[in-house]
Every structure is written in C-alpha cells, then in structure tokens.
Image 1 (cartoon, each protein chain N blue to C red):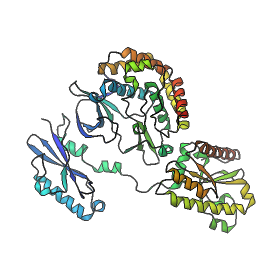
Image 2: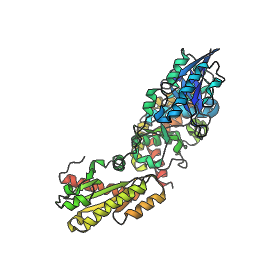
Image 3: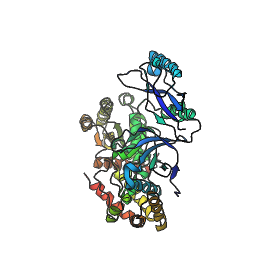
Image 4: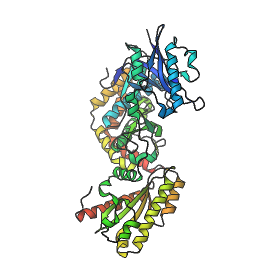
Length: 241
Length: 272
C-alpha cells in the first residue's frame, strides 16, 4: 500500500525514551537490528498517527530533514509510527546555531511546519547530531503528532492560517534560514494535486480516516500558497519576543 | 517460540549507580544462553581492581540457568536489566542480541568522540563559515609580515591574531573570538585582552597603522549574560567588542568583513 513508508512486521520494545513530552514513546528493535523510536497509535490517537505519517511524506517533498520512517503493524491490528533513531544527539540549543551545517534543511523545517500547521517545534523536537564533531551539527526534525494536518475539522477550519510561533525553539538563525524556507515552499507549490491527494489517501486508508478528500483539498491549497504562508510565518517569527 | 533477553550490567560503584552492559541472558523456552559483549571497558577506563572484578562477574554468568535471577556467586556488582523480547522471526536470538543489543567494537568506535575541545580560533572560523564570510577571512595575522615592518620588537610584543581581513592597502580588521562557555571564557578573555592590549599600545605609537587598522573582539553565542558582560567590560578598552547574539552588532561585524573583503578583492587580493 505505501510506496515510501517502510512496513516493519517484526519488532521488540526496549526501554522508554527518557525525554519529557514524548508521550509513551519507546525504543524498539526490529529483526534486522533497525533501531526505532516507536509511538503507538493507541497512545497518540488516529489523529497523531495521520499527522506523523503525512508530515513525514510532506517533509520528504519539501526537503526537511526527518529520520527514516516506518509503520509497524502487529498482525494488521495495532499500528505504530516508527522513527529511525539518530544516534548521539542533543536537543536544539541556540548557542550551537552557528555550527549547523544544513541550514537549508533547517529552513525547510519551517516550511514544513507552516504547511502542516505544526505548532510544536520546540527545542526538544529539533535534534542536533555531531557530523562529525561539535563544530559541525546536523539538524533533524522529529515529533509531528501534534500537527493540525491530522485533525480534519481543525485543519479545514484553519485552511488559510499560519502556525503560532509561541512554542517555537528560541535562537533559530532566521536571517540565515529564511531564504531556504521560501525556496522549500516553492518546491511544495510545484507539487501536483494528484501527488498531494495520493499521499493523503494512503495515510487515511491506513488510519481508517474517511475524510481524505477534505484533508487532501486543504493540504493541496496550502501547498499552492506555501510561499505566501511561509513569508507570513517568517514575519510572525521575526516579530516574536 | 518467542525468545527473551535480559542485559547483564556490571555495577562498579553502587552509589554512583553507573552501569556497564557486559553480557545478556538469552532464553527461548527452558534453555538459557549467555551472550557476550564484544567490547568491555578495560583497566585504563574503569580501574584495575574494577576491571578484575568485572572479569570475575563475567565468569560467574556461565552458571546462569534462568532469566529470573543471576547466579548467587555473581554478587552485588552484577545486575539484570528488565526482560525484553527478541523480534519474531529471528532465527538466532543469541547472535541477534550480541550483534544488535550489546556493545561492539564498531559501535563503540562510531560513538567515540574527541576529548579535547576545539580551539578558540577554529570555533571562530567556523562561525564565519556559517555566515558565509569565511572566504574573506584569513587566519593568523603576523604583524611583521602583514604590516611589512622591520621593527624586531613588534614580533616580540605582538602575538599572532587569530583572524583578519582586508589588506595593507585598504586597511585591516584584526579579530579575536571569545567562546563564553563557563569553563573557558575567563582564561580566554584574559588572553585575548592581553593580546589586544599589546596591539592597541603598539598601534597607538604608530599613527600610520592607527588609520588603517581596527581591532575587534567577537563574542560567540552561548554562555550566560553575566559572562558576556564580563567579556565586554574587560575587552572594550582595547578593542571594539561585538556580541554576536545581538543581531545589530553581528550584522555590523559581517558587513565590515564583507566591505574589507570586497575592497581587498578590488585591489587584486584573492579571497580564500
């Protein structure tokens, strides 16, 4: 069914992820030794599951750096979203902003958050990986289960709005990443209706969400106007205290 | 039948609660096998007596017959982690645990990190790279070379400056970074102050140099507000201080670097 998201059929839980506000996320290993962070649909709800899967698919189109993703289905019953473990990471720290090597992708994260209406990009949802050392850090975007794209009623109601920057991680180098955020938005603008609706249909089929058409319609509209939405979001960020 | 495992941790000191994975008990049905970590820390890491104790604990594990408890002879320095399941479909649970759960030399090497902190000048240059001005910035200013002076006292009194831009024709900006990290900033602030003070005095006695050379101390992001304030207080009498966390000051520094760099390029200087 999925063309991009890997399906994992054999998984074993390890320890809980020892970070606040991760819900009941646990580390898990698959039969081939793949290391994942597992979030059960039972814990984050159907909305969270859709938000994670859809945001991941949109992230890959916009160029936002997200870990490899997968879905685990235990005999077709319980579903979980899997996010590949990035080893040896810390969370976003404004003091380390000058050492980010993928500022273009950091900009794409803002574009992603704009389009899927993710208002939860706090410091804990931006990972910093030594690549290869403390002066060269690779940024990763994680945890999209709160993105409004997973809640059809709210997503439709906020068709033309931009995310709130209230929770946004402090110290993002906006002047550096703004051009890349706009460039990423232009990539989304160029996505076709068929492509966007196709992504949404696949996620909604898996989650048994019937409102695929509504979500797809709004998401496509937001992709088409992504450059303007991103510009507005950047203005809000710049004017935030 | 589903297989399970429990990691065995060596506890060198129960009060610090440090734990080192050294093995695992792997059970499938009534049979219990012992998986060995391919890498355990040696005496140089944990101490000679602790290393000997670790080996002693390892020897006792071969007597394990159940996943529920370690052999009594293991003692208090061996503890069991919680039971975990092996994914279904794994044909050799023992090999799977040794390869994917327990530490291996490769996984340790990949996680090895340098012990020494990066040099102040390296961190500063990295900052210029991020802001796309590094191609205008040169490393290690030597006054006897760049100022083309023959005064031997200059090279004695004036230590090299970490970064500079511009040229003798258009003028130069000499820059020293300070990293405001708690464990570094006091010593590096003193060093930078002394270096810039020497240049400030020398330039003060040579009017021709005064017109064309600027001294700048730039404070990299991070640290406490107090630390940043201290750095500014100490260095401002001898150099222009730029706090890169203040957008206006940061942009000002970057503009000057670009200005000097462009002017130098017009004079035929090739950027980095």
